[in-house]
Image 1 (cartoon, rainbow, N blue to C red):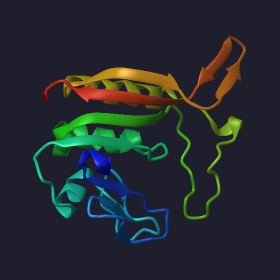
Image 2 (cartoon, helix red, strand yellow; image 1 turned 180 degrees about the vertical axis):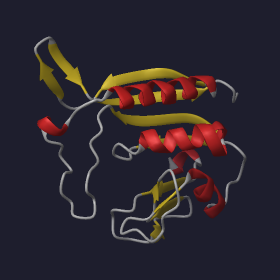
Image 3 (cartoon, one colour; image 1 turned 30 degrees about the vertical axis):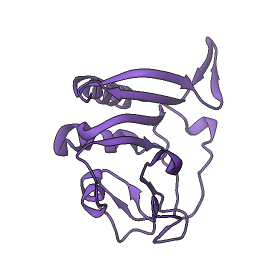
Image 4 (cartoon, rainbow, N blue to C red; image 1 turned 60 degrees about the horizontal axis):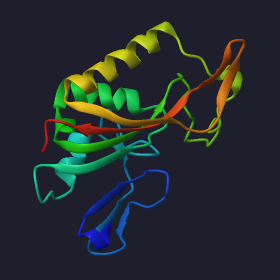
Length: 174
């Protein structure tokens, strides 16, 4: 990406660093993207609105955001699409969607691999999933790629994947 004159900001609170630069264009931040700011947590997170304030943007448009935030994508997207609107500044959005209600325990590093018995989709979560996906569509994001990722869970009627990689393009940004 640096060879293409892109500035990259990577965010991950689990690496054990507060931040560093690998070059003039590549920046690493030891904070994750969350629905709300919580800098006091063992793994600190900040909303996209706060992150935009923390990093110097050279333009109003953010060309690419990848969310791989282990089931928290639903809360982050819901917050971004209903309140701040900062996500509308993103041209391309890649999201790893988890379709279950599993929450990893990052502070103890337990539960990083979900047990099959713990993987369920409730009617409440299914409704929330549909609401968030509808809000993405209404905000101008069009799904251009989706593929199941990793394993699926077997049921009597077949195998259902619970993890998807998706790519969305914001049709409102030329």
